[in-house]
Length: 293
Image 1 (cartoon, rainbow, N blue to C red):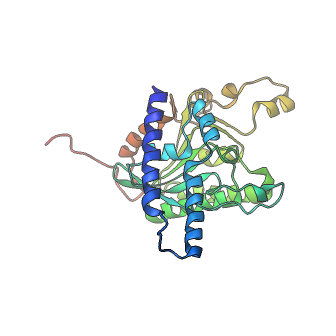
Image 2: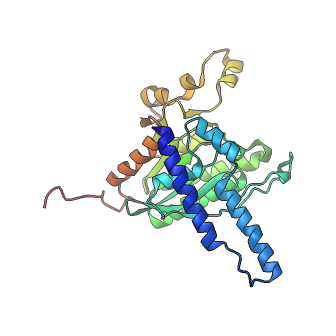
């Protein structure tokens, strides 16, 4: 069933995006050579950002996980997502990073509507650098957090990240500090939701732990400070990923996670329903519907 639903989402998404690119990015025949070359380059960059690497996407699907964009498409009302900073990439030039750039830098961010109400959200793209956090990725997240607080609207983080981007060193860690600061500022003011949809380690789990509601996916998502190999080296204890930081352990023992869902699709659809019961901010009453006419 997951595969069938995934194919339907993927076919719809790619058809829609191809239509958008054809309408919005078509190069006019009358354009001057310089303009035409620029538009072709811009079109190629946007295609790269939207469609990604086919082999890595297939690998993501083989693990019963949706991609960052598929998750957003399934969560928000159709046609309402507005993306921010689609072509942003990292500034790192060390360790060969100057030769490795991808538009968006492994994070899709923006705002959309869920059941007609505005939400701000970001989604880590594990197919780009393992979804690691760079300085620019942190800036994109902080931008979404600031806009959510300014608008008094919920913020949703879809996490599928390997943590800090080690090539950037302390710059990446400083980005986490900026995110945590905003988590605390937003606490009690706007609802903060975190979906854990992959193996998240280190800094990638500290921010979700500061949010109001955490959703995990059984046998697919993990939250831990360090993985089983490091635990083995330090404590000589043998433990697998599920026992260390799986959905079951966090929803039944540690209490970090509030919900354990069967798969990505169930988690996203459940969150859509869950949002119907939550006010957008601390000054708004919870949504209500008449029970009788």
